[in-house]
Image 1 (cartoon, one colour):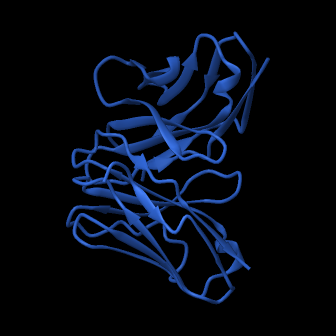
Image 2 (tube, helix red, strand yellow):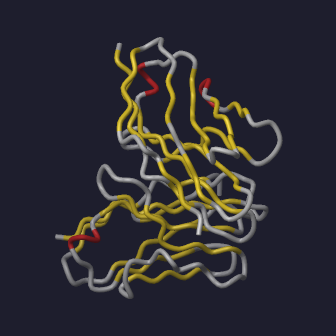
Length: 114
Length: 113
């Protein structure tokens, strides 16, 4: 596609429910990142995929968070048993193979846990 | 692991004056450095990057940044600020190789007319 696409754009869920967020990266981009941005805060790194390498999961805040990526395409971020502190904008970005290219960001999914 | 520090939460500058947004980084090897801007209710937009070569890099909207290896800094600058430059600015770094892109906590720039 022309850009990074994320869905849904907004999600309201009840505390304790599971949610799944989707990211479609730019075609041909091997690197994919997930970040969390709380209101008025910076970008918190969650997870990084690069091609067929094992993902870097060092930023995942708890075992309630997980992510998968199918080859070099779609990625899903799953949050189980959501808590109110999970409320944030979840941003996905992708970049090319070399690492020198800039990352392109999607518009994000705004998650609200009530 | 790599990290980025943006020491100022907020920078205020008068329109027409030069602006600087500070960034320092920590990596074990040579860095790739980036600046992004986030306008209200919009996604992050790429401004400029340093990969190698000339320490002074120029980017979008008249912004530039200077890579200083000895001070491990990559400050963002613009000679003459505009009110429309008011936004949240993020510095980011990645080490060479298979490593993630790590962001600073951001600096809010306010340009006052």
